[in-house]
Image (cartoon, rainbow, N blue to C red; front, side, top):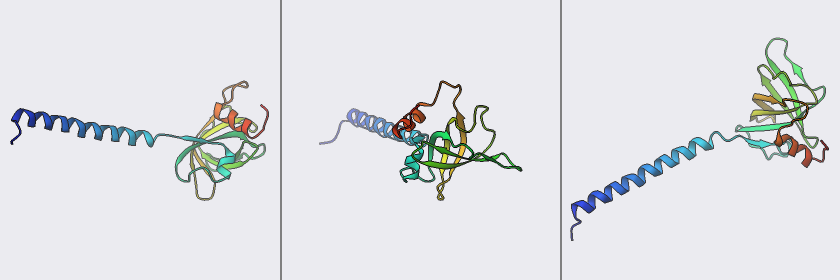
Length: 146
């Protein structure tokens, strides 16, 4: 028994809609998954829970005495801690005005094979009464009173 031409045309239209919708959803999911920056406190980075060579964020307090500025470039090296672990950070660029030792920061970038966080962006808290929620949670979970 042959399929009626009208039914065949409807079947092809429905199949085309399903195929193109699946392709579109797959492209959207793939695009969004590449833009996700997961937050890791320094203790998790030191424990090896953070992925290497993947975009992540690390936040905590800048360790006093850890800031080293290059004389010949915009490179800055510093350490970030949540008082349970400390991660070395290297950043090349202009730091925010509020960046300072003992202040809360969130750095976005990648962890390299040597355990150094290579930041492409550094954000500092914007006033004395504010701390990024991720940093506050990391410090509290490490037992540090805010």
